Length: 111
Image (tube, helix red, strand yellow):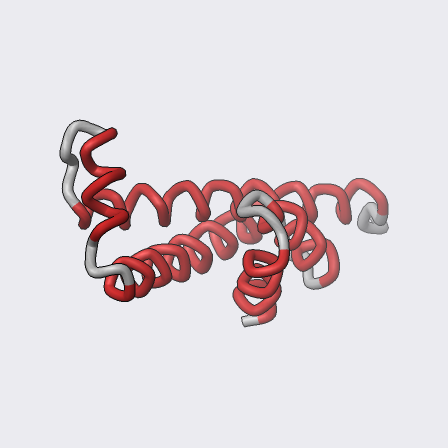
C-alpha cells in the first residue's frame, strides 16, 4: 500500500519513470528478498497503471486511445491498457529489485 501511494504521488509530481526511483526507496526501506520485491512491485503497479489508464480513457471519451492505437497498428484499447500496465509494472519491479538488492549489499546478513 505504501508503494502504491508513493508511486501515485510521484507520478503526479514527476515524469512517469520516477516510479522506478520511488519504488527503489520504498523497497530499500521495507525490503525483503529481491525476487519478492520485484514481484510485489510488478504486480501492484501493473494493476494500478492498468486501472489508471482505463479511468483516463473513460474521462477522454476514448480519443487518446484511438490515436495511440492507430500508431500501434490498431491493437485496440484493451491491449493498450495491458501494455501500459506492463510498462509501469516492469519499471517499478526493477526499481524494487534494485532497492532490495542495494539494502542486502549495504547491510549483509550476519552469518
